[in-house]
Image (cartoon, rainbow, N blue to C red):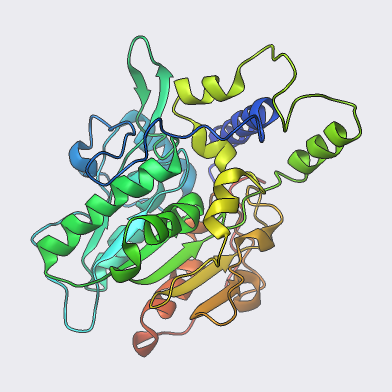
Length: 362
């Protein structure tokens, strides 16, 4: 998989924006959460207008094989449905579960799943994905960046996910779904659904691609900020007791961007989510990580720790040393796809064709 030479700007911009957000707000005061506790009937987030009830409804886009191409397409066509996804008349074949594909932070269903969705549908699976909680560009003018979904409070997104999964189960007649998620969508978001909103009885298997299960240090920047605060070099980052030039928590809330700081290693959200164990009884878990992850750092923060649970942590380079996929490319990596499918259906597993995969940003 080769990246488009002109298309590395957007992932770099996303990273730059994330870094700016974290510098302003890492562990700033109490974590910005919804004013009231979200519920599936009232999740409290922001709906994407081109995805009513979460379903992308602005037409179907082409199958694409790189993240930059898919992200660029979704930015121009908000609410695009990936090929093969969201056919609510689909009936799962015997021995299969409906598959819900969960996007990552600042990604929508098409940007994340333009490659996986058609491949999974071609294998005879019923496939679904959804959009919620987009970035708010200007709250006064109600301008949204619909291609940057799952930016808002993750507990609200998890509550909304509960309702979407129920819709999938009702339409298919299935008792459980399988989940494949990228980044936030492979870790804290679906695990919040499982922990807080009844997902433990409705999820068969969660496959996480480069999930932010333990948050990220952003190459150590967040740890360096905390060390500097403890040394007295900077003030008010952790406690919020110093006058702030910018009210960073309010800034994130105004732009519906709380998910960024919620995924910092050691954040109140991650701490609460992982307290008491990272997995739920009755749910299978597979983590697929890459040593070249450039967002979840260190890459081992993707791993789930519950050794007694039905949990498998896989480093993609242990399956294929030639695979140099990074964070953004993981959902477009044919090697990772085969690993994910084999995890879901070991009785239908096929040989992993190992070959060189380039990172998106290189």
